[in-house]
Image (cartoon, rainbow, N blue to C red):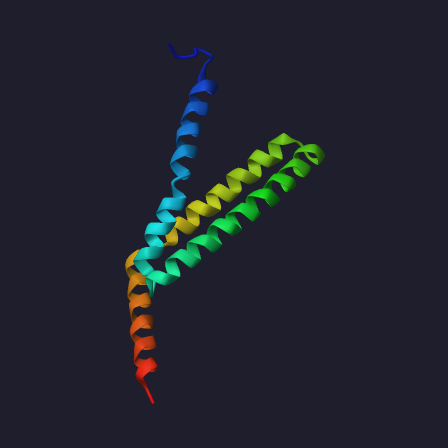
Length: 118
């Protein structure tokens, strides 16, 4: 039923599951953005820009990854991917939704007050 190739196969299974879980970041991004957005109209524009930038970055990563793979070796590609993943984890840990929601609300109220000021 399960391959019996040792610890390596188990590690690959675990990494695959973690990778699939990390792919949920698009959904997390949209929920978080809706939570802190000033206006609902900004959400669609911001998400569209994010998808476009993600696409551009993924193409550039593929080109850079291929270059690194051929020039320095395959292990460097995986090492750099791990470093970037740790950077993403660090950024995710630093997110404080309640604090950012308060800041967004203050900015929204300030913008409305300035809109009606003479």
